[in-house]
Each structure stands twice: as structure tokens, then as C-alpha cells.
Image (cartoon, rainbow, N blue to C red):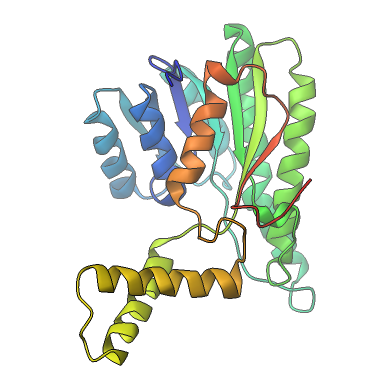
Length: 275
């Protein structure tokens, strides 16, 4: 399917690594010019280089969105870049439960996940309104529906993000700008991959090293299945990939999704159930 994204411009916050980088590269694959944002200049430049190799325009904007005035500066750069698609991906997470969390932990969760989203969005909205077309896509979490007992501050902050998305969609009625949220489930990260590899190595050692090729792959798949069963049981039977999230974002960013507005799209393998 042609998502009709060629020639559009996008800002993806927190796109110098991880899911954000995959989102940025997926949008570039669809023909988007991409403004890469991050705090590490070298990492952001590496992503921008990979994007430029796809034949689209790529630039970098740096800054800690929790610092005063930085979110607004990033938004101005995005406006001048021609970004009509905003992907609010940046947002830290930390482990705190109800017994250990302090007021400062709750404040940090909201200052890291909620306020930067508000500031960048508010600053870019006038440009989107003037243009008469735009997309605001925010990254939530499966913790919105199933709060994690060891991440209570993060879960609450992400729930606020979904609430904000619904109200923003209504606020932008008739402007041609839509607002949606993508909530990932448990996504395989580099550290998770290392865990798979270690477990696969243990499996091979237990079988006296007789597994090679497909056998090693099978051990890694078995390790992932065990992790899914223990930590993230879901009907799809696997962990998510950054590409799963990026595909959902690309769809919502496209003109093809003009009639999709104000939703939370859960990309979690069914871990949260329905509705």
C-alpha cells in the first residue's frame, strides 16, 4: 500500500536510538523528510546519515526537552524544517512502586513524559493549523491499561498522555490535524536481545554444544518464548519489535488515516485484552 507520505516532513522526538530511530527510518522509507531529535550528537547524526542514504532530507536537532525553553526551540526548528508530522516519542521510564516512590519521582515522571509532549505540541500547532493538515502522534504504553506495579509513576504519566491525545483531537476538530496515540507492549530492546543470546548459549552448553545454525536460532526462540510466558504473556506469543511500533506510526501519520482520530492504538500482541 502506498501511504502517500512522500514529500512530507516529520519530527520524531527521542529518535537518536531505539524505537524512535526505527520510527524515523520507517517514515524515511515511505518518503518522509525527517528531523532527528536527541541529546547525543553522534547518535543522532548516525541516524540522520542512515535516513539521508534513503534519498530523503535529514537534519538533526539536539536538546533535553525537560530543560526550560528547549522544547519550544525544537518546535521552531521543526516548523522551519517543514514538519507537518509530529511524533512525540521521547519520554523516560523508571521503576518505582507505591511504597518506594517519592513526590520527586512522580514529578520527574510527569516532567519527562507529559510536559515535553505538551510544550512541543503547543509550539508546533500554529504551523499545522496554518497549513491545514498535520499529524500529532504520541507514544503511550501498555501500562496505560494495565498499570505496572513496579512502574507506578511511569504508568500514570503515560495514562495522562492518552487522555491528552483524546482532548487534543477534539480541540483540533475541523483543522485537518489529527491526534492519535500508539501504545507499545513489551518491545525487544538490545538488552533483551542480550538476554536471549545468553539463554541460547546456556541451552547450547546444556546440549554439549551440538546445536548449530538452526539449532542456535531455535534456542534463542525458546528463550524468548520463556520470557514471554513469564513476563509478558500475550496471544501473539512473542515480544514486540521496534518495527511493529514504527509501522503503526507510519500508518497514522499518513493521509490514508485521515478518518482515524483521537484513538489509542495498542500494539501489544493482545496483552491488555479488549476492549
